[in-house]
Length: 177
Length: 373
Image (cartoon, rainbow over all chains, first blue to last red; front, side, top):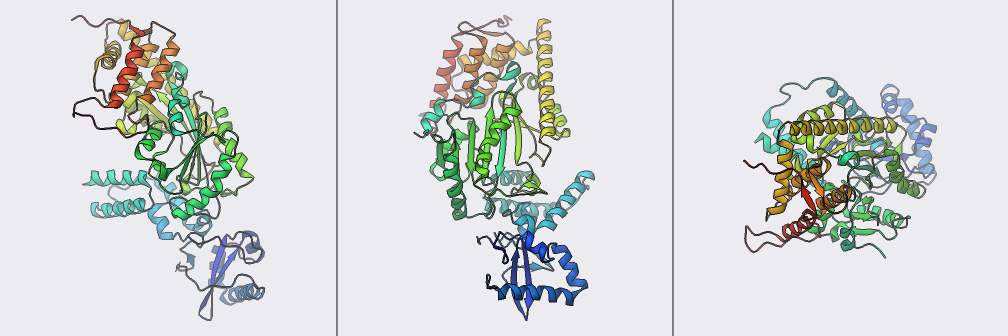
């Protein structure tokens, strides 16, 4: 498991993570909420939009920040090792928990995952609220697909030693058989 | 001197110590509180090294708190199967924790009303028990330890979600509330399926206390809330209290109804109590499931006046019967059960159970005569 990232400006615990590609080399940024807000980089969603709509202005802003940080002698940038999907981080830099893990298990790896996967958690909440509000479809998936999904979830539960969930999934599989 | 396992086994946890409140219906209440440390992976995702690092910080701090200096403490990897089963039966270990190994610790204070588990589903899980149905007092006891630790540790929380947990849907107050109810009359009248469906609609849950022995084993059920959402603790307590006392009222109504039926010649109640008395008196190799069912009916028989003590009071008799639920456990002494010499021979725990109940029954009298025909 990786250690806790510190803010590259003030040294407090980082909660916002960015990766900027400069001349083909990836540079990681780790900032705390206060510093990110000060630098105008608080909302990752707005960053995505900024990058799309004002690419030059955005690049200039982040380039300036990266140079400032490197110049100030703070933590040296490392090659990117994180997986990305589009503009969204798909792996928590603190614990290496991935978005796929979250989708498979519904659990998170550490407290920092809450900020890394904030959008996905919110979407999941909305989905669950909607599913509570609307009745379940009669046949959402075929028996084979359902069995395969349950088997995957069972494997994931065993790997993370969540035996209560594993037992429940095992029983569901038995019923299917 | 720290409490050891054998001493721990000789004393009853709160809800086996006295008869339940409200005519032996509310056996006790429990609060579960969880917290996680920032900067460490949650236990389900962390390595053994990561769990040891978390326990290395939390364990000395917990053991230094008032009430925990002489607590029982064990790392799960040092507990064998029998000890784990014994702690599970006493509700001093959660099922999830019973399967854990390195870096996971259980700490039980001397009064046995607080159990602390390190690296359970979350870094810190505290269970606090009370045999009085007073949630305000329960929460005071439950929050005592985390309040003392808050100055030293950075517990993961944010303003949107409250206290952060490994399951995002469980974030919030980090608290779950439970009540343990003895509902023999509702069970005897086959009303539990309806009760369960009603409870579901009230956003609460009800589950058997001994799920491993069947849905209705011992007629004891756990009524519990979902993890409490941030800022709605008061509402949740009021709601749980309302539902709990409604169930108590229904149980009393059904008991009254069964007694009325008994007066008109219906034998359901008297027959159930007498059968249980006979089973406990004469059976030679009684299983644990039969044992807890029979003890439950005997408790109902005492409350309804069918079984009366010839020595001491009804309360003392109920207390002894309550403790029998615990000491009737096959794993009560924390050791694996040795195989009997013959497949149909009684095991040592069965013999011990039989001796204990004979001693109690010798001091009682059965008021309803067996049917002559």
